[in-house]
Length: 93
Length: 289
Length: 255
Image (cartoon, rainbow over all chains, first blue to last red; front, side, top):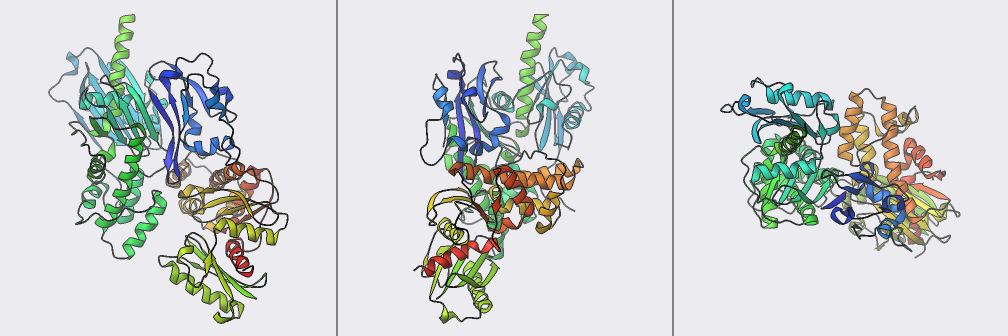
């Protein structure tokens, strides 16, 4: 399944999208430790798969949580996306 | 003082059925931030439910909802084989055997309520708005949930009902009583939309027109959320705002798809799904013994 | 030379009259629903305050969200440009400007000449600007002016889960029902909005000296939370809400 974590408000759409079917096939799940802000964690979902998810506390302020990795100038590749082997993780902004 | 935003609490149970004849009695308790529902099923058929406003204490609200659902049936908690807690307060249902997210429960509940043909469920609750894509078994294939921003949620609607001093149940109908659809309010932010609405009222706009402008903006906001995961037929709407025809009608017009008619109270989808998950889990538990 | 700057803010209109670079008159008025009319009234009041007549003013520049609708102005400049210009004029060592108004929050990085290097905005969402603290002061049933003082008396930090002004209001009501001390709630309110402003500052990579302007700078509770979250002190000019208009007036003076 495609899980969209984040929100949409007057300022725009801010979602981290995790394809859990691809994610479940991953072996090392490096995304969670790659994130310098602790936005991601590994959980057991409702269908008993071990998958990555956005930590509950960050879901409603994801724009702010991810801001340190998203400067306007000289933006490097996002560590979480780079760490994701199965290409399961994308950002909507 | 009239509280314009307060909808009516209610309960129901099937007077024709006798739960004592049933084998598997399960329940789903959905404790939302605004409303709570308890749903009892007997052998996979809907038997009883209650819907009430969530109080300041989640465990208390769960208990009250459950007791009210069972009222007049002779059922007690001991007769219920498995309880699933769901919703915002799911970890706070003290008598539940397992907690499952409202996403999974809503998909499962919608599958029961609307049949295996349903593929897209829009749930507009008190403090959140979610879109769930599911398969013929009611398993989630995609979801997006917005609980950060009041726009497109029941709470946002309540702010407007309060501003215009109109009971929440009448808001939808009133918004359709316009000859021509006015331009939508320009801000999605409820706080800023409220300022805009105040200005429009000052300019002499009738309440129906202001409501139409707001409902128009809100339904457009919901459509963009729908587009995030895509809409596939059949399309169903659950949750409290499903009862707001002003939003529903505008939504349907914009996506060009009609929502499935509701045969059950749209607010019980989460609890219903929970009760169905509970049934599977009870079967597994019994066969393991 | 006498110039004027008009800041057409979403909530208030500010007018500043300059003689060269010195402020000689100012006025503020609620923008209301007819912001052009409100601006005309504020302009007349500012001229009165300065003791000059309309014909004495050589150039007028407008700024602010509603600057397209400003009366008398021959041109307009962006809010970030006017903020940066004003900050450098007041504090030559300023390199970051944080402007928190009623409906928008901004963080701006500027050069020593007052040119804008980078900026980030909190816009279109009440939780990112002054509308948030205003809504919370209503929920706490205190005047906005008293909210700051109240939060300084807080003895413990509590988290605020809601990230929306509407949901936060409900959360405040629940906290009050749970008998949480008003001063602790007030502090949570300021910590919440400060973190949303600091995130903007971090996004552009803020550098000292940091200047704080905009109406919300009057809120000492917010300033306290902001400095704690930034881990850095901020300087606040007198009449912080007028600084945008001041910058526009400076731009007028420079031609």
